[in-house]
Image 1 (cartoon, rainbow, N blue to C red):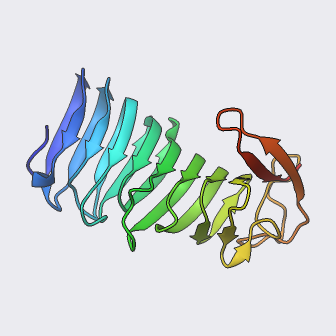
Image 2: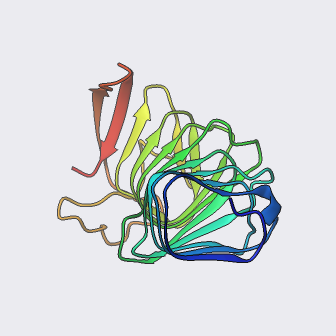
Length: 220
């Protein structure tokens, strides 16, 4: 448990869970070349940075700061397979050789008015909160909208999956009309802005787990 501000954990393996406690306040915490066998719970930390450099989290990274104002930066060979945001947060993926924040889940527990900011490249973002204010800068390979979702920012979204009846809006444009997607060769089409200008194929799929009908929009 980290309970004081401005702490660095370096060159170690943590066998269980790591807690960055509220006692850290708005201070900084750095993890450098650390393997966490369990999960990391971020309950404290400031808007400057909780730094993950060459960090592997085998469990989940769970962020739940009371005021929603905390920044987590992943650099180097850092891989966090699942990140759960129970509050507002800023996630920054920069200069990565590892997987970074692979799947980000925005929880229904996020309080109204809390801001979610995603900077960098993300494999998958799953949104369960219709209250969170989401801004993204970079690329999201797949956005899964389980509830009405509104995203703003300079973001390229390659694929959007939405539960039937759910509205997904990217920079004030309905996602089933215009959004950024990749051409079949994997490149972003020239001239596509934040939300794109192309026609999109729309297919209906059955969700294997829940049986819910989902609408999938992609560039194929």
